[in-house]
Amino acid sequence: MNPRFDVTIAGELNLDLILYGLPPELSPERELLADSMVLTLGSSSAIVAHNLASLGTKVGFQSLIGEDPLGRIALERLALSGVETSRVRAVKSLGTGLSVILQRDGWRNILTYPGAISRLSCGDLDLDYLSDARHFHLSSYYLQSDLRPNVPELFRRLKAAGLTISLDTNDDPENRFGDDLYKVLELVDIFLPNQREACRIAGTDNLEAATKKLSGIVPLLVVKVGAQGAIAVRNNERTDSAAVKVETVDPVGAGDSFDAGFLHAYLKGQSLSDCMTAGNAAGALCTTRAGGTEAFLDRQHRERFLRQHAPLCNLRSVKV
Image 1: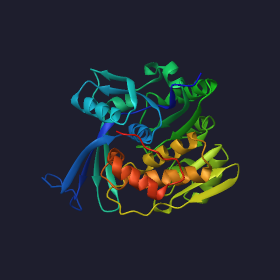
Image 2 (image 1 turned 45 degrees about the vertical axis):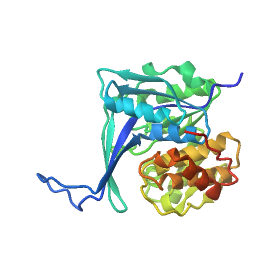
Image 3 (image 1 turned 90 degrees about the vertical axis):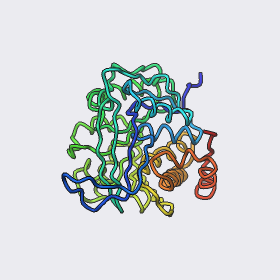
Image 4 (image 1 turned 135 degrees about the vertical axis):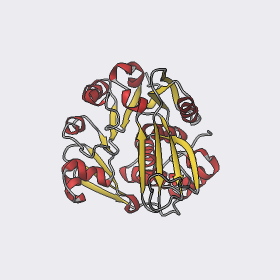
């Protein structure tokens, strides 16, 4: 029997409040002004799910949110893309997480209230639901502190059910990148860190050394290197893919959108080179609007951009 989903995701669901045009320094005890703001769907797990579904991938999603307005808005915005959300549970005793992003010229601060983000545990997961797919993706490994100790067992059970697995750890707020991750990586089929994360996890400042070390652990390593594009290593074969050059409005969610484009093409059976092209195109598309999902909501803009930058990668999109 064919599985219900192409991809299932268990992870965080919250909004991003992004402030632009900030003063160079935030002085204490002052009321300071931003030029503009946007309240948009945030969280790495939800951005990947939303943008995958916008590209036509069938996605099932599990999460915890608070029984509050922020949770309801986040759930509504995720469902707009076609993600199946029946396993998202609202808990009265929890507050929905929120990230406040202070966007500056070329860099940013991200302040996150974890709330329900950190409270998702294996006991909350419907493994039959998650297993009814071809592939499972996990983001924000370090934010999901209640789930984290049981991730190896979760991955073993999903692999026993026949799923392939991808992981994007995202940043570690404690900046530790502990050794426990190596037990997880042994169960991962596709590892999708950015350059900083790859180097911190490998314990080196040298990207080439980090790539060599991590590609010896996972079957397929894909390192996102921002404006330089991305590097993939599989079976000692390296593929470099250049970034798509665009006028960037906002880089928030670009790495998660790369994941979505790459996984969409990967699950369509595309070549590694085409998967990289698809990832770079999806990441670049994301940066043309504020927030991690707004560019994918604009159907005409999305389809025109993907036809131009990834015409051979089967990045068809769906009406959302």
